[in-house]
Image (cartoon, rainbow, N blue to C red):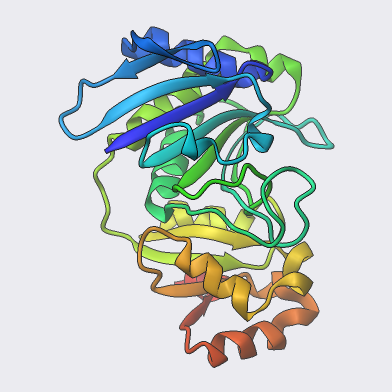
Length: 277
């Protein structure tokens, strides 16, 4: 399996993560370039070849970068911004439930892997447990549009956090440990409802044997229809077993969403029932 880890030269957090990967894991520079930048390779595992790429574009607007890089999975190492400037680490799938204001294509999701997302989130919680940072999954959002499975792993939310070497080390270890985690015995789901920072889905991913791929937050439920739910399922690498509803986080859309799932003959579970169990 070929894995491409991509950072942007414009992004201090991505460069920080890249530098730590090279330093900590003995990546070796190889005789090819991408965007006039050096490419580094790690091939010390039997079944995985991992390469580091540096693009001169903003990551969220690096559309179809999977056509320029040969890899089976893409991990984008990136900065994260928030209005509150909360120090944080975040992991999320990519795509747009509605407009494509921040890269990607309108109403198009990208392929993702619930297993890789879960393993990244588990490792992130292990590696960042001694920090006071918020550690969270985010709902599916922004670009770039790619047709290979892809996830974002991010440091938030200001220059101070982006450039902190320890934060780059935490993400570098998280990425490498998650890639090497062979645990695939999970139930697979997509998530619907709740806030952008997915408090209930965070708990489920950490506390249960469920892995979650795409997440549609409450603020996009009015845009969610049968086609987008089918797309979220089709654009999950693994076979999706059921849909998880953040029940309180569905607001006035509860019955409409339930009716769509019933029409599609999809099994669904409620977050309050899973967490109660």
